[in-house]
Image 1 (cartoon, rainbow, N blue to C red):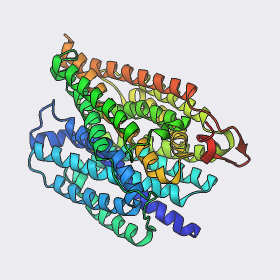
Image 2 (cartoon, rainbow, N blue to C red; image 1 turned 30 degrees about the horizontal axis):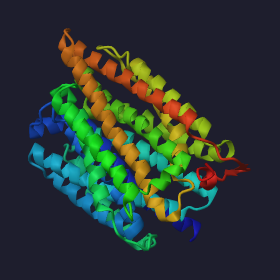
Image 3 (cartoon, rainbow, N blue to C red; image 1 turned 180 degrees about the vertical axis):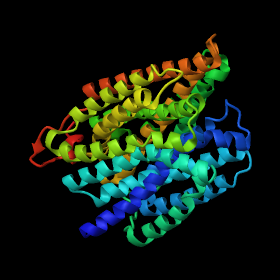
Length: 476
């Protein structure tokens, strides 16, 4: 395959991934408009974001395994078709319940797209330096898409209406689908046995969804209520049953042997709290800008502009340095910068200002994310057998999306609980709730730092000009 065709294929796959990530965040700025148009209550509004993230994260393992078994290109095309169709239907939705259901279906389609696209990238780019560069660019797409989504969502919501946050996917989806059909090489599936572990898929999806649902409803039910504890206990039982099933299934959805690769395990554990902090920050800060500072959708979106710009610069630089210095030092440094940014937000005042109260965080956080995301992606996919590339891609995407869903549920729940218990004026109570939620996000990053220090290991040997990343995890 010629160099030009490789990067053309990468561009198509990256746009597909960009669409998936974009739709996690693009609605944040549009939430007030959606709420007013469709009559959402404050308690149900977060489900515009959570329904998508839940279905996306809950079905990613199924999507990744299906890509390995039935062909990555085929699964990607099916996902693209569904994603495009559901985007159109969401834009036409006339009720809150219809929008939430369609957002969940859109998330299911995204779960087919994302691991198939990443595993195709890993198939196309096998050389060390090229793979590092591709993963660096993929990181920009996978994390910067959220920030770009906030900017694009603000422009579309203010000038064209909130429905265009979804209509915009339709022409892009059609064009990219045609490009993938014509240019991406077919992949027939790596495994001889094409039996899909449906019991495992049902157990893990139900368990993950129940867990996030229980956390998201805890502020309404009460954190120690029977409903909350019962739901969380049920979720835990489902996940334990999933592990039991995987250990005994002839053709498991998630072969537990993949966790013998130490860095794969560490990278997945580390990804969840990082994404939890980042998505919680986007959600709460967008609400702070609109409800407290009274920013318009466009101004809110423009406020995030430093994030993707800084992220792109740092990620591009790190992808060139990982081969020389290894990835652990970057994985350790990243959470420190992110924690500093979140700690700065934990003191935002009621009468805040962008330059002194928000901008420092929008500089520190993308530096941290840019430092660590590409190395984490490399750790999560290195040393994995070819037949499990889709599974590895599904795992790291699951950690990312479920981390985001959990972070949104926990941090918004903490903020709501603190605000409801406060005895001050409503606006002061609201901001105090944000303070405590941001402080909780700092704790997430402390956990990420500990995981990076204790679990992630460097390759035993480094080659000049390029690390042997493919053998890094396998050697441990």
